[in-house]
Amino acid sequence: MMLEAGEERLVRACQRLPKVELHAHLNGCIRPSLLLELAEERDIVGQLSLSDFKDVILKEDRSLEECFKLFALIHILTTDHGIITRITKEVIEDFASESVVYLELRTTPKHNEKVGMSKRSYVEAVLAGIRATDAAFPLESFFACEEKICASSATMETPNHRCDEKKIGRIHVRLLLSIDRRESVEGAMETVRLAWEMRHLGIVGIDLSGDPCIGDWKTFLPALTWAKEQGFPVALHCAEVRCYFFSSSKLIDA
Ligand SMILES: CNc1ncnc2c1ncn2[C@@H]1O[C@H](COP(=O)(O)O)[C@@H](O)[C@H]1O
Image (cartoon, rainbow, N blue to C red; front, top):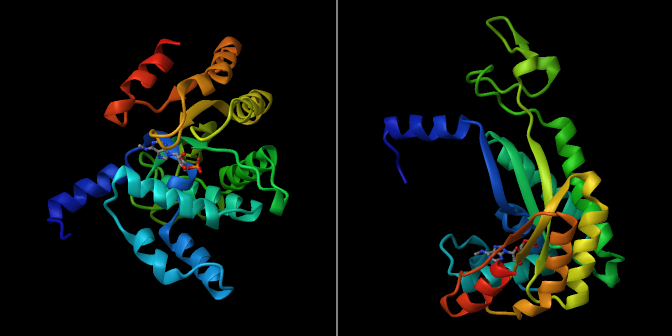
């Protein structure tokens, strides 16, 4: 879409405006280019056919149902620790490049025996991505650096422009662990206990998400009640689908 000059300036100004992002699902923010790269690798070894999935990956407007089909594909493609760390790093860089100064990522810890992944090691892989980016990716500063991107302290001074080091922004990232609505009572409890144990590492709460047409609210009640008893914040996805208003209101009441 072509933008008028004034609109372009407005978009640019909005991009540079410092922002807070409180609702980003890690695997929902994966770069399409990485998904294509991973699908291509699987195509080469004959594990899936890229031509079957290319349209699903590149489609822009999706219904809720199509989103969950894409999530299923993403979860097939992103099964090892290295990829999880890379996705985390890239997602943070993408938000930072849009001047997000505080980011709350949420993600569902997964276990996958085939690659030696437990829920804990999944979270550790995400935290490794956060640490890698936190240390190395100062933000473009809206207030101090005008049009210039201060990539590191070594490049902060130019003949015509001096960035004040104190004002250079840095993206701050925190994590919520998600319970998927497909999980069991025990699975949900494992995630909540893990989040509580790892709270000193930047885990700030629990999220209940996943396909709203799946699962029974009673399954998640013990885990969410336990989190509440510890004083641990809980975010609920609810009421996305009309016929599930009842279960949503039950969870909110609880
Ligand atoms: C209306 N939008 C939505 N409603 C409910 N759940 C959603 C969602 N968008 C994303 N997710 C949840 O986030 C997972 C992908 O990220 P992670 O693998 O956890 O990082 C999806 O599988 C789904 O469980």
